[in-house]
Image 1 (cartoon, one colour):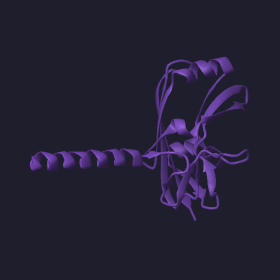
Image 2 (image 1 turned 180 degrees about the vertical axis):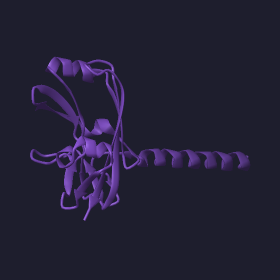
Image 3 (image 1 turned 90 degrees about the vertical axis):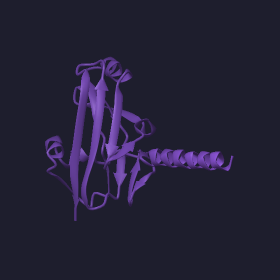
Image 4 (image 1 turned 45 degrees about the vertical axis):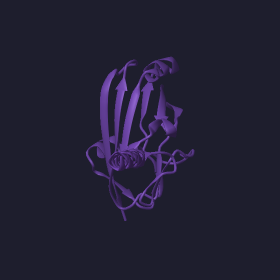
Length: 163
């Protein structure tokens, strides 16, 4: 009987540790990676990383962001010609995001809509504050079923915070 009880306790301990590590890997608003805070508090006027570097630089890992930029967005958007087309593209889409290798609980961050020239766009509300010096990456895996660009899309953006 003791052997069964000890084995049961051991199994519970192992499963609990596995569950903790899964939770630890999922970033939610307010969580930290070291001193860097991941949030959903982008304010009007805050820069997004593509305001600091071009998407080409971000895709080619040639983006350098001065440490004086203590808060900026790391969000991407999808855009369509009309609001109806945007809703169609968005409604069944799926998104997976990792930041510096950590899974992001993307739905917890929320979205915001904006005009991009003649296009209607929706972006995730993800910001980082106090990113440490060095290389960082955020990867978006997007699956669109509707809209003008259906299919699977993976985009990895890399930037280096410099002194």
